[in-house]
Amino acid sequence: MTPVRVAIIGGGLAGLSAAAQLAAVGITDCLLLEARDRLGGRILSVSADGFDREEAAQVDLGPTWFWPAFQPELDALVEALGLARFAQPGQGDGLVERSASLPPMRYPGGIGMADAFRLRGGMGALVEALRGRIDAAKVVTSVAVRALRRTQAGVEIEGLDAAGRGVCWQAAHVLLAVPPRVAEAAIAFTPALPPALAAAWRATPTWMAPHAKYVAVFDRPFWREAGLSGMAQSAVGPLAEIHDASQPDGVAALFGFVGVPALARRAIPADVLRADCRAQLVRLFGAAAGAPRAEYLEDWATDPRTATPADLAGPADHVLAPDASAVDGPWRDALIGIASEWSPQFPGYLAGAIEAARLGTERFLRVAAV
Image 1 (cartoon, rainbow, N blue to C red):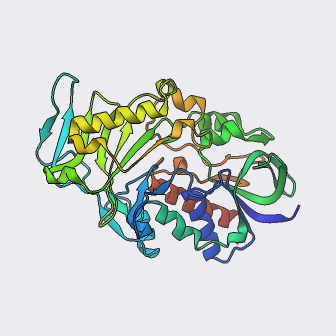
Image 2 (cartoon, rainbow, N blue to C red; image 1 turned 45 degrees about the horizontal axis):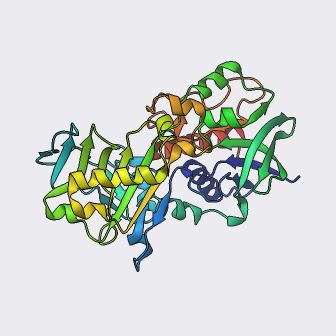
Image 3 (cartoon, rainbow, N blue to C red; image 1 turned 180 degrees about the horizontal axis):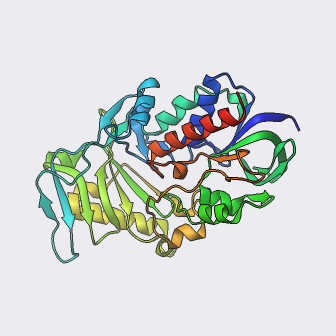
């Protein structure tokens, strides 16, 4: 078991950002472990078929927006990585569906997404750009960390690979880029975390955990021809909120957040839910919405890397960040939380992942006297 100076557990935006920051200051004795078979975590961009340019075909099944006006750190990273951003399409009228017995109401000027921006190529472009700044040999996917054991030498990391075989590493320090509630539920800590810290992590909802997103891809953004923005709110459902998900000069798409609670969705077959979503789009935007060229349904509540049973029953609010490390005892500074939920300003947001990763990395550099 060859020890490393620092191990990052979690290959989402926070983990990738931390790894890139460490590489930038010359720390190569680093390892990034990801339980999924892909990097990105809650960022998930997929490519719709039929487009010559990959970036023009991307639709986001995870987080979609950021707000440069009040999230300058993330915006600066986007610029530094050479990524192109564009304003969320919003020209045209919005729709509100209040009752199944009444036609949708049309609201001139749309329904709020002021100052929201997206990335050309989807948010997956951010993942790939950060990935390019990390030594691929330092990244291990398809390994689920199951236990962390504090030792005199640092932290022993135990996990299972995709075949169910045990794997083990030793690190002087661990940066935990896994949501606090997921980490507390999935990882056995020896010795145990301080009770107050464990309780705080357990009480912190994971953003997106109870959510599901539906995306429908079309040949053209036909709703714009009718003077509609693609934005809609509905008390009827199954989609509670709908937006234009098109890429500039690329894929035309609508996406919506499923308003059916996570526990209730378990009783609805996916094909039935997709059909209900299509029927709702027809009610709102006309017959052309009933024949998408492709459609996607991503239920994050079914992903154990994102959701725990507590997330399915509780609210999905952004809450104040818990402590990222123990204030005393054996885990102090040996284990530092850096996932988005540990961000002081933007817990749960993409910008929060960048902030939490920076703060955690800076703390590691101080305590490790690098």
